[in-house]
Length: 318
Ligand code: BDR
Ligand code: CA
Image 1 (cartoon, protein in one colour):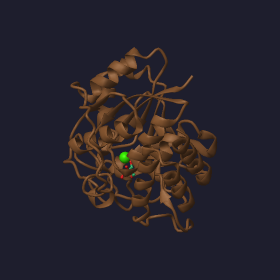
Image 2 (tube, rainbow, N blue to C red; image 1 turned 120 degrees about the vertical axis):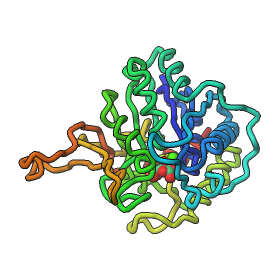
Image 3 (cartoon, rainbow, N blue to C red; image 1 turned 45 degrees about the vertical axis):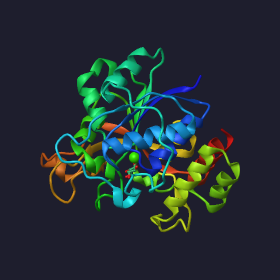
């Protein structure tokens, strides 16, 4: 039976890749997509999401959520994802409109209506999901789990120590990570290591279906960003699409459970995810200072080529 999934997105070049994968994979039933401000404005995110789903031939309902973080103003990532959020690609505008209801209401409706527990895949700042958890805790308790692309156990990207999705709305991330819903973090440590090769991009171009061609165009854009880890010589990062693949290819990942907290102060470290990988507590605890206490699963290692192959096979085969 396919896994029922709802994706929360800020589409986003790599969110677009994730949507193509989710729509194509036979073991995933994409029930709905909710949009939040992040890589681009909420209106742009919704348009991108509908346009990408149209190429994917997916009619899952799409709803708009919030247009800014809980406390701070929205700060987009246009310099990374292009002014329109999807690498300045001009997609055919979808004839569909977002649902009239708020994203949080669509989450409630879909999760309550599902006979099987739904997996919530967060590929964006966590504002919608934090509001959903606060407004509808009884519905949230029915979730299978939340898989969060966010955070880092090493270096950041939005800042030296913070990953963009958590940095954009740290309070929302802390609400999600400290909720009772089982959560798995998919941080930059694995996000950065799932990379498509030039040959795989050519394979997508040769597949010549609209969704494979779109994936190739998005990956061609990713190639221009040149932000790979030092030990990966070339290729295009799959980003959020790796987190989507994690739902059905978790055997390619090393997952550990550690206390995780979000730094909420307004200094250099705001939005840092503190993953406490110590084997014993230290002087900070001895002297009564705080450490994260809520444990979360964290994906820390990955067989990147295996996950990239799973993405390519799925999008080419669909
Ligand atoms: C995350 O932020 C966005 O730039 C990407 O879409 C991804 O969700 C990576 O930090
Ligand atoms: Ca994203």
